[in-house]
Length: 125
Image (cartoon, rainbow, N blue to C red; front, top):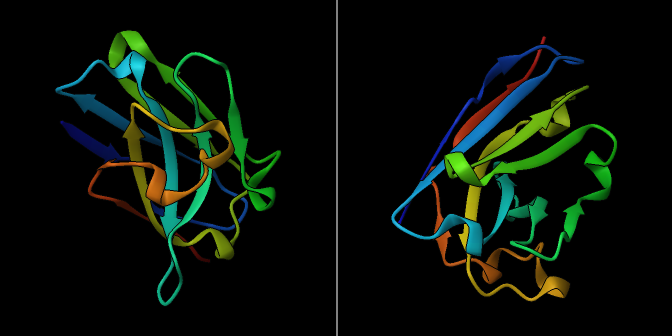
């Protein structure tokens, strides 16, 4: 099982980035997927997650209306479109996947067994 995240970088406040996470080694369409982030000195937090089939989608309150998660099962890829970025969005962003995620716990990092390597997003002028 492998997850490869990409798309991070330096962006000015108000700018946009799209993160991608390509999965391999498992039946991607059977897995819930999620994006998490961890800023220096802070715990890892769930940003946006999506179930495999039930159509359950989660967004952290602070990113609602700005971030959009999507998945392309044909390409084994999950995306995170991030708009109107602020310095508070600066963090290392991780993608994660797991086959058995309870919908009520979809945003919890400990619900996921498989993790990508992280991609750094820096929002600064």
